Image 1 (tube, rainbow, N blue to C red):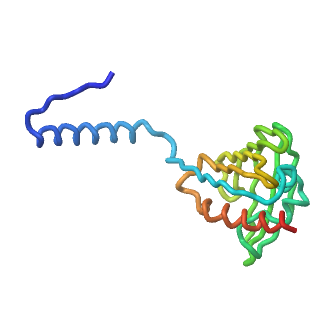
Image 2: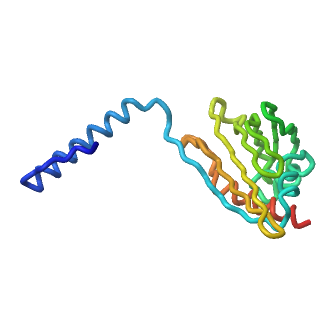
Image 3: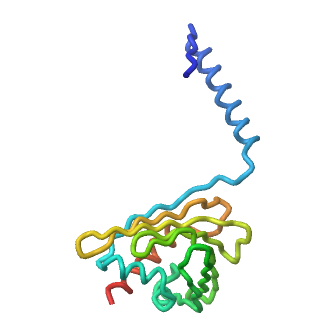
Length: 176
């Protein structure tokens, strides 16, 4: 039930509410033990059926064709076993030679519909995030709802830019 205060003076109300908000913020800061998190949500329509989009996410040969945000980068290795509890690992290099390794564990696997897995960078040990992908048939294509959640501000990765760039590569591969 909300608590209502009746203040005769506007300045007194502002002072009280300001002090209350500051106290609440201080309490939240003192009780918070984790870094602030964010998520990246992207909706993308592909001109390919869900089975083809699914294969591009779950088959190593397909992943080798599109993974990584650098348009001129390349995948060096891809080990995938899309079964609940199984691990994956993908290593790719940017065009400047910088290598990145992402790994994780599959949490939910519903072929052609949903894929959920944890995400870890080898370069950022101890930071685990979550990726959720939902595929919905739409005409002759597929609507993909993508979310990368639990992102910490301390990460050196620009996830929104990176995933959009990656999905542009993904889209080109599906058109081949």
